[in-house]
Length: 120
Image 1 (cartoon, helix red, strand yellow):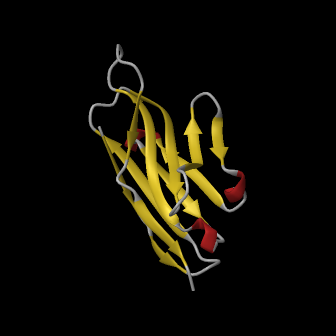
Image 2 (cartoon, rainbow, N blue to C red; image 1 turned 90 degrees about the vertical axis):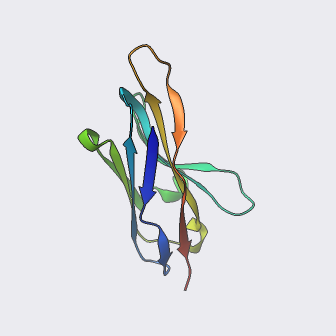
């Protein structure tokens, strides 16, 4: 299983970016998929998740600005980030909780990370 993320970059404060993440490989089911981020010197934190049990989850700091959506047949999630702030600067990691077959347990998978920099 691989998670391929794209869409990071440099944007001015108040601007927008859209991240994409596609899961590929031997996938039986996905129970959670979304985004975490890690800023320099800080712990990795959840940004937004689409979950089977809890619905959509957002960090308080991004509510009203970020929106997560998914394309189930393509095993892809998108993160639309609007009204970006300098404090949103971080490496954004795609995450998914995946079963590779009916009998397997769910495992955590991570993408390679994509840099988002918000600066004037």
